[in-house]
Amino acid sequence: MLDQWAAQADSPDALCEAFDELFTVPGPKYLTPYESVFRDSRVLEDGREVRGLTFGPSTDEVMRYYGLAGAEISDRYDELPDHVGLEVEFMRLLCEREEEALNRGDVALARRIRETQAGFLNRHLAAWLPDLVARARERLAHPFYTCLLALLRDFADADLRYLQSLCSTEIEEAGHGAV
Image 1 (cartoon, rainbow, N blue to C red):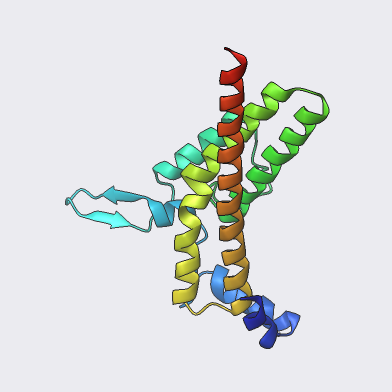
Image 2 (cartoon, one colour):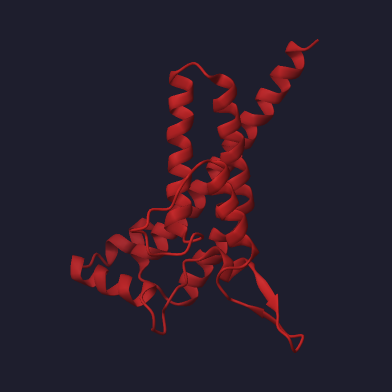
């Protein structure tokens, strides 16, 4: 994947132009970076089901995750709560908090934070990144951004598998300790 991009290495200006084509409305290559657009649907008054709208149920659930973790969205942030960048930032925050808990020796809190990370990845980020990558490819997005999104998807999948194995190991160890 990265070889494909490297073969077409562009100037920073070309990358900025490709970014604007993908993430600035309007445009034929516009790629909506919001989970709700990919995952949610609504039934209209006439009974038709419509997909591709923002602020659906997944947005509400993402906001609940943020709230339960005590994460607040800055007033300076002008994107919707289910923007891919904000969901990644939330995962970064959880990782930072897990590290802080471990450094303080609070293993129970670190375990709960890992469970939150696994739940958020499973129910949100890892659940819709494959669709975002597929849409980027459909739109013939610049290889740099397609590769970047694919890398993010693959990392989210690997992190989810790691966290799930870690959480299941912790559950097994707790069970053995109770005997």
